[in-house]
Each structure stands twice: as structure tokens, then as C-alpha cells.
Amino acid sequence: MDDVELSEGDALRRMYRITAAQERSFEDKLPDLLDLGCVYLGVETGFLTEIDDDTQMIVAASGDHELLQPGRSCPLSKAYCRKTVDVEGALTVQHARVEGWEGDAAYEEFGLETYIGAKVVVDREVYGTFCFADTEARDRPFSEDEETFVELMAQWVSYEIFQKRATERIQQQRDQLEEFTRVVSHDIRNPLGIVDGYLDLAERTGDPEHFERCRDAIDRMEALIDDLLFLTREGQTIGGREEIRIDELARECWSFVNAEDGTLEIDTDRVVMGDWSRLQQVFENLFRNALEHGGEDVTIRVGDLDGGDGVYVEDDGTGIPEAEREQVFVDGFTTGESGTGLGLTIIRQVVEAHGWTVSVTEGGAGGARFEIRGMEFVEPGTDGGE
View 1 (cartoon, rainbow, N blue to C red):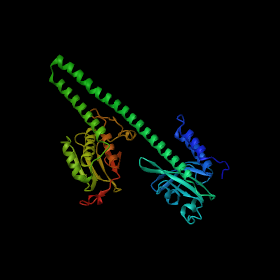
View 2 (tube, rainbow, N blue to C red):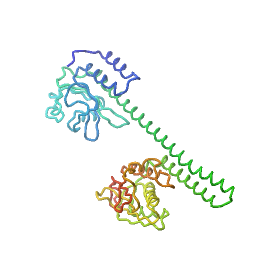
View 3 (cartoon, rainbow, N blue to C red):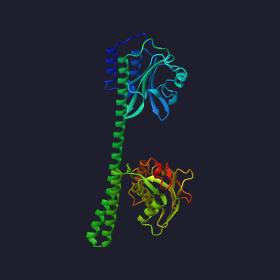
View 4 (cartoon, one colour):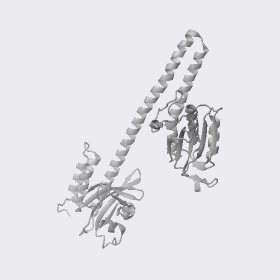
């Protein structure tokens, strides 16, 4: 153990200087904070963990313990931290073997005799733990001041991770807003230019066909605005879930699209828990996309995926080139003249809001095939097993 000793006041002042340095990043401050904790507590190792499901991963560490290095992970069942997340305040161990840890999976895995740790909570959920430990036993229990010191460190880490996530969310929203602005300015400017040009022609010639072209352009702007409103107000959220028969949903959505010469084939009778009105947006946009790119006489098939965890919607049209499949869900991407470029974005957002995933590949007849995975089907009348 380190022979340097720090008083509580010295340790708190050093912690304040580290955490208050505005010009330094969280990642830059973290090693200094871990080093300070090791010196103040007189232990050899300090580490920050992240807990994901049943796995503990070391995010940052100070010390030479082989198993407590950044990037190392282990089952949570073999970690001291599994007990840390279940207590209020700090969990302390002065002499593990004496205190009943001998034979415990964590003791056998890491061989730590001394341990003190506090949980890190972000957005009201446990992120992980902030801990200090040693392979040698401690000659005295941890004091209340030492426990408070570790808890303060854990709270600071919680705040910093929360701020970092918030900043990333804000940047992501800013990027999305910039992309939306680009899409809107481009897609609305085009039909506005068409209206302006054909109104001039109509004034000069009096030909009513020019007014018809203006109406088409206005209809396209209205469709774009409707799509934008859906994305900004509703696309990322869903209401209450209900039992939905996929075949009934598909038939109703088909009746809403203008497909007099198209054909819909349904090869599923599965029932899923979902938001009916939101999933209407998904299937209507998939059908309209197939009609736009596959032609009015396109055949569309809805069926079960082989894995049993979802459904597909495919057509016998020209399909989507492999090089463009990663782009189709990007705001504004379209290869058609009349589309808004937002229909597939709506599909992705609604599907992800349900906790599912959507991807595009080639269909059996060479057309586009959209696969929605992650669905949990239910038996009719079970209400999802609740």
C-alpha cells in the first residue's frame, strides 16, 4: 500500500481542483481522480465499471491488478460490485476472508481483501460503480469520512456521464435539425419553382393544363409537410399497444393506397402487440414505396420471416441497388420524382419505437424486400401474456 497519507481536507481540496478544471475533459480527469482515491484510502487499485445486463466492464482504472484494467470484463456474478449496486451509500470490506467472502465467486476471481465502492447512477438507472480495492487486508475499518469521499466521487462521475450524454443528444438533435432544414429547403423549393413557372405559363396561354401541374406541385408540398409533422410529433413515440393481426392491418392499409392494378398477397396470420395507427404508417409507406418504384401493376407480398421473429414486405419491382440500401432510411433519400424522401425514415422511426429493427434486401422476385425483426408474436386473446 502507498506510504503517502492525505488528510480528509487535503483529499477534498485536491478532488475539487481536479473536478473543477473546466478546460479538461471527463476522460482526462478520471485517472487523476482514481489516483487520488488510491492515495487517500491507502489502496493499490481504483476503477470505474459499467454494468450492462449481467456483465461488468472496467471503463478506467488505476493500479496494476491484472483483472482490473480498462476493457476487461467478467460476469457480474463474479464481481464485488454486484453487492455494491444493491446498497445505499458505499459498500465496504475491511478483511474479506474474515468477513465471510472466502468461497465467494468474486473473492476467488479477484482475490481482493479490501474493497470500498459506490454505485454510479445516470438518469435514475445504475450505470456502474466507482471502487477502490487492495489484495491486502486493511488494518482498520473505513471511516465515515472515507465512505463519504467515495460517494462524492461516484456522484461526480454520475453527473459527468449525464452531462456527456446530454451533450451528445443535443449535438445529435442539432445534426438532425440541420439535415431536416436541408431536406425541407431542397424539397419545398423544387415544387415552389414548378408552381411559379407554370403560373407564368398559365397567365400567358390560359391553358388549364398548367394549373393542373401547379396543383400536383402543391399536393407534393402537402405530402412533405404531413411527413415532417409526423416525424417531429409522433414518429419516435407509440401509444398503447393492442393485439394486431398483421393480415388485417395489411389489408386495411392496402385499401388506403391507390393501387387499382397492383396485387397484395398475404402469407401470415400472426398477431403482434403494437400501436395500430403507427403501424398503419409503416405498411402504407411500404406499399406506396413499392408502387412508386415497382409500377402500378406491382405484386406485393407480406409474410413471416424464416426465423419466426418478424415479417417481411417484398415486391416484384426493380428493387434497390445494394450500394443504396444503407442510405434508404436517411432523411430525404429518394430515387423517385414524386416521393418526399421521408416515408422510409418514418418506417424506421416507428419500427424502432416499438423496439424492433428494419432492414432492406433483395426479394425473391428481384424486387425490394423489407424485413422487420424483433417482434414478439402472441396468441389472440392473451393480451401479450400480461
